[in-house]
Amino acid sequence: MSSDKFKRISVPISDEAIRSLKIGDSVLLSGVIVTGRDAVHKWFMDCFIAKTVPVSAEDAQVYEELKQLLRDGVIYHCGPVVSGLQDKNYRFVAAGPTTSIREEAYQGAVMEHFHMKGVIGKGGMGAKTLAACAKIPAVYFHAIGGAASLIAESVKQVRGVYKLEFGVPEALWVIRVEDFPVVVTMDSHGNSLHDEVQKNSLKKLEAVLGE
Image 1 (cartoon, rainbow, N blue to C red):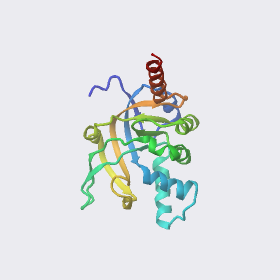
Image 2 (cartoon, rainbow, N blue to C red):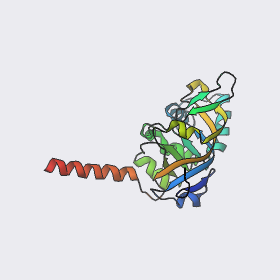
Image 3 (spheres, one colour):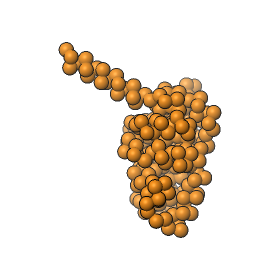
Image 4 (tube, rainbow, N blue to C red):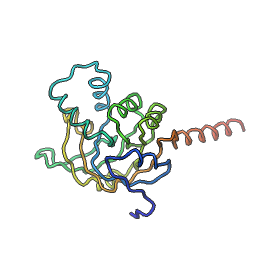
């Protein structure tokens, strides 16, 4: 893979690096990131943001560790296929992105709470997440759907896992990635390629219906 057209960004990410990114930018991410999907976002919201659910001492400790990992960091909407579960010699076999819009109800609040600088997924997100990207600042990185095995090659180390009781796809996997290929599709300046695609699609539909 030629990296000539990619910007290289290291995690943790600075405000300046985030603000330099625009929609359409191709990026190679390197550093430690954390996976998290539906169960994780609901847990974050219920236990630590809305605080509607009591928190155990164990979860409180996990939360403190995650705060360090997620500050200026990135969460990846991914349900990985993981080998080595028996001996805890974990390795990602496949690591493709899952649909991000499922987290729209939680994502903006979660990003602000942990001061995250990025979300990786597929399909984009909505107005709440875009507003959070402008406020923090942060961006949404679109990963290539259907390239799970290729993306897994970017995962150089599985450093650990939290909340494995959620199940392998839903757990928080802490991974070190190198040259993880993504495209900025929502930036910190209020721009969203997903909005543009939707608007253009509506225009084309209206044109067809008007014929």
